[in-house]
Image 1 (cartoon, rainbow, N blue to C red):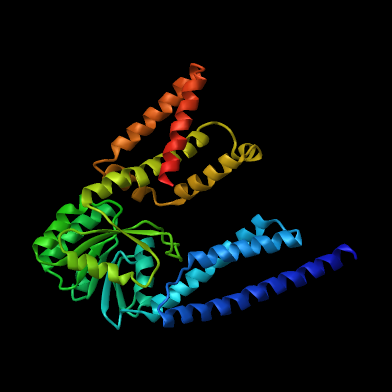
Image 2 (image 1 turned 180 degrees about the horizontal axis):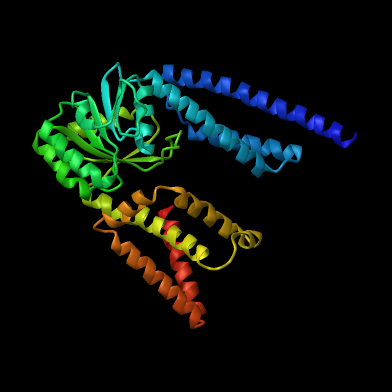
Length: 361
């Protein structure tokens, strides 16, 4: 067969693959509905393990790389779970036409919450100057009023504290929560709402606006004194597979200084060093390695994100300088070990890191 004929056969196989994926998705939809009607959980880890092991065994019999089949099936499983999760959220929708106001709903995470509430049958309104004009949108949240079952504050951290305090003066009757990445800058506003006898709590989604599948993702809940409000917020996510974590205000910001502040700073330092190295990006790309490529992917995602939000996470966190000092100290120690030719010290540093990471897993 000539090249064109071989390509034609390949095209036919690719079409069959797509058709099989479509057939698989239809079966997955039926499975999801069956689980829902039977009261079973969306995700079954034991079943996933069996599917992957069976596929690996079959791949070996056919002379196919088992790692390739595992990668393909993991993508399909994640897609299936995302589809089942969406269907469950819609089916168990708790909205019933209840009114929700998302302040900052035209932003990235604000938009995620708008879609989430819409999928559950809430009547969602947006207060954001950047929102598309409609009967359900307002330029200023004050014009929207506070007569809602739920009010979500999804604005930048620096603005959220004042909005929470202003809401307290209006004493909204519904559930109120913010989704800020830091909490101590919001403490005064949250405490004002609690003092005004409002149903207030605080959330921090540990995932981005592009997240479709919540399984394996974390959502932090911070009770600021009203346990019933926190429970009501948790119930909104009961139909999802998100992992709910409880945390105190100070504990949250101290942990976030490492989880977000340190990781952001590390990647900013990485791409800053590259950008100021004088080495052209195409030349470095030609010399890429597994570790370098992996780090580039993470740092590129950081570089594309909102620099103003990243600065807020660093600057407004009262615990923020500690991890930055630790990062500078670690880099200085590595430099000193390398400069002094201290191989044993370098090896010891890596051994301690390996031990720590093993404990974390």
